[in-house]
Length: 133
Image (tube, rainbow, N blue to C red; front, side):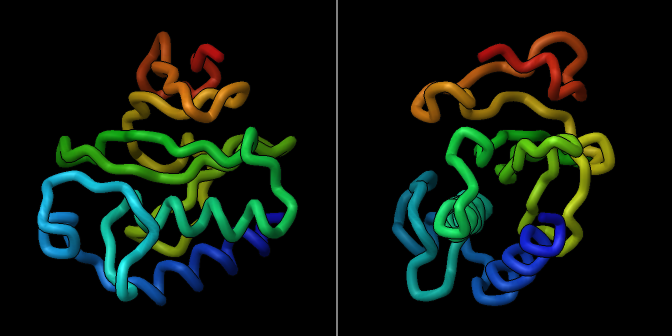
């Protein structure tokens, strides 16, 4: 599983050139699949999520997650729920890490029971197991 996650992370990270929504779509915030191989963090997440779903991973285990980076900037990553823990796929590096190894502050993520709903990360902001579904 980790090899599959790492392979897709590398493939997507290397195939998209970072670009803001403003530069690509002319608006401050626009979630979409990468346009002309350019996109921001949400675009990377959406493509990785799609590719992993095509590999047979359930959408209930592929959760878009909003975090704060160490510099305080908001950022989107893909969290993969596995029997070995929750892994994070990020466009800022190719490493597949357990959520606890990322250094991010976790704010909210998609619900595993309804991916159209967002749930806050409760309790300590760095503890994913506090998410409420």
